[in-house]
Image (cartoon, rainbow, N blue to C red; front, top):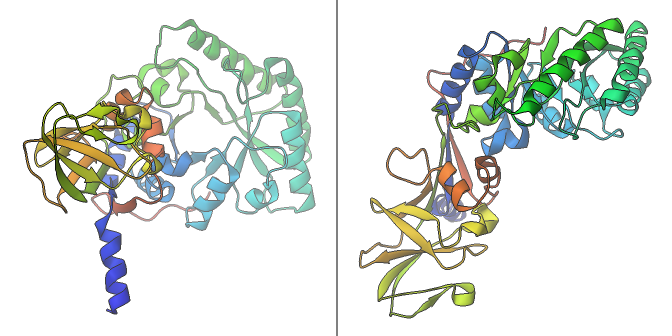
Length: 392
C-alpha cells in the first residue's frame, strides 16, 4: 500500500461512523409479513430511511416483501441501476417527470390526476415499450396532500379505462393513505377507509380491475387490519421505527464518533457559541467531531447524551455544525476513545427515539438526517440473502 493510500485509509476510519445492521431489517420484515395476509411492499424512499435503499430493499425482499415503493422516479431508477428487478412503484412526481425512462425499466407509476395520466400516456406513445404502462390510481382519502380529489376521481377512472382499452396503460392498483393511523379510534381513519372503499367501487364501475389495493402504511399495518386490503406499505417499520409505540422492533443503526481532545476547565467556563452552558464546577470536557451538518439536531442542545467509557454523558453547550462537547465531570477519557451517539440501546447507549424526544421531532427525521460525511458500514443480514426473483 502506498503512503497516500495508507493515509486515506486512516482518515476513513478515524471519523464518525454509522453502522447499519441489516439483520434488524430482516427481523422487522419477517414480523410485518407475519402480521398480515396481504402482500408486503417495502418502502425504501429517502435512501431506505437513511439505511441504504438498495441494501434495505434486497434484505426486505429476501425476508417477506414482494415489491418496493419509493416516492421519486430518481429513487426508482437508482434501484434498477443497482440490479433490483422486483416490482417498484413510484408515487410522487411532477407532470414533467422522466416517465419514459421509468417505463423503459418497468417502473410502476402512481397517477393522481388527469394531467399525470396524460403525461404517462404521452411517454408511452412517444417511446412504445413492450408492456403497457403499469399504473396505480392514487386517491386522496382525507389528507389533502397527494392523490386525486374525490370530485375528480370518477373522471380519472374513466380516462384511465379509455387509455387501458387503447393498450397504453394497465391499471394494476388503487392506493390511498391514512392520516391518523397511529390512533385507530380517530374518526379520520374511518373516513379514509370509507372513501377508499368508494374509490375502489368507482374504479370498478368504470370497468377497471385493480388487483392491488393498498391503503395501510406502517401504523395501520400494526393496528388496523381493516385497512390491509391486498397490499400494505411498510417503510419506517422496516428500520425499527414504530409510530404506534405498541410493537417491539429492532433498530439497526449505531452512530459512533471518536474523542478528538480532552481538556480541564475551571468553574464558570463557558462552552460553545453564546456560552449557553457554563461549568458549575471544574470539569473535564471531551470534544467529538460531528454536529448538525452530520445530522445531530441542534434542538437537542443541552438535552442530548452519549455513551462514553460505559456511562451516559451529557452534551453541553450548543450543538455546532461540526462538533459537540461532552461533560465528563471528574472522569477521564483519552483522544481516540469511542463515544456511541445512538444505537439499539442494548448497551445503555441513547436510542433514535431518545434523540427524537430531545429534538422535539420524529425518529424518521433523525435517521434520514445523518449526513454524507459520516462513514457508513453495512453489516449483512444472516443467513446470507438469497438471489432475487425476476420480474413477472
